[in-house]
Amino acid sequence: DETSPPSIPLLQRAYNYAKTAHRGQCRKSGEPYITHPLGVADIIADMKLDLPSLVTALLHDTVEDTSVTLSDISIEFGEEISRLVDGVTKVGRLPFSSSEELQSENYRKLILAMARDIRVVLVKLADRAHNMRTLQYMTPEKQRKIAKETMDIYAPLAHRLGIHWLKTELEDNCFRYLYPEEYQKLVAEVKGREAERKEYEREVVEILRRQMMEAGVGRSGSTEKINGGNGSMDTNTTTLLVTGRTKGLWSIYTKMKRQEIEFDDVHDVVGFRIIVDDVASCYQALGAVHSNWKPVPGKIKDYVALPKPNGYRSLHTTIIGPHKRRIEVQIRTRDMHDVAESGIAAHFLYKEKNNGGIGGNKASDESTRFAWLRELVNEVRRQSDPIEFVNAVKEDLFLKEVLVFSPGGDLYALP
Image 1 (cartoon, rainbow, N blue to C red):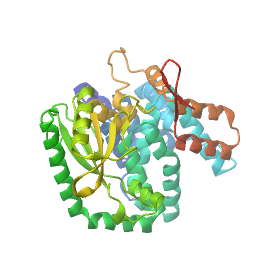
Image 2: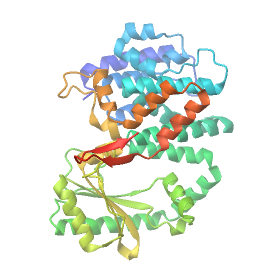
Image 3: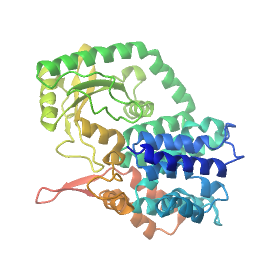
């Protein structure tokens, strides 16, 4: 537990240090600036990261926005935290000939820092998430600029790292500022069908739970066990959990655009999850679903046997459910659920667990599993033109992975 009593003095010291450094500074909302580092630290706590990450969240803007130096941070909090703070600090104090060159250099620095220690980008994503939550205080021009950068870079980064809840939040907040009319229209439509949707969700959850029980898939558990903010689960959960969830607004909107349909024609606004204890129970649950409902051809995907490159594992199926409506069902274990929602943050890379420490080398070893990250580092070395580099970064983040099998049956993600 990172917030156990021995950790409290360090967190209190970091908070006091940041509060003093930012004294007299205010956010656009008029609130004291310290509310931002606190908000970022709160998101880092939701991710269940380690103590150095929490301290970095509190201190992340001190070097960039105050007279504090990295040397000061190193003396006061140690080399590890100084290195993390440096990783999330922009290079804006150096002279650049254009805003494109400045943006390019900031991305270069972030990519190299995250390749050395993945915690850097997790703090950066938390920083961006909190900024997006408070974007209403910015000018419309600034809102669009920040939202576009977030949609182009940070939401895809969250996706690549497998942090689903954060990707969804970033996309929905970007949607609000990039397409305000469409956003407000969709919000109204979703709210207009909220009562009907909740009733259908409750009905399907009860039906699926009963069918799982009849098939002998575990014991029934409460639908309230999943934390809506980061997808974490209570370890005391019983062996079967069936839940419904409403899909993100941006996800719904892109589906409407892609299929050229209206909201009333989107029949899978609500998705369902069945969470069980082990892999064998996943396949047992899938069999139970298909024995009761007709599956849609071509919509069955086995990410348990063939995980996605970012570690995501789950069984997916689309069925013709109650009232002849298409519904998507995901089936996974508790551990799979934590990884599905929190991605690399769910691996507890920096806890003293089977590795004797929490240093950056372990983070680097873990991050090299991601072929896309290696490719981004290569782009840093290849591209000298700022605009070409930024475009290359966007392409690498948006491109879908190409998966191939070796003759020996090993699965590889091509860069």
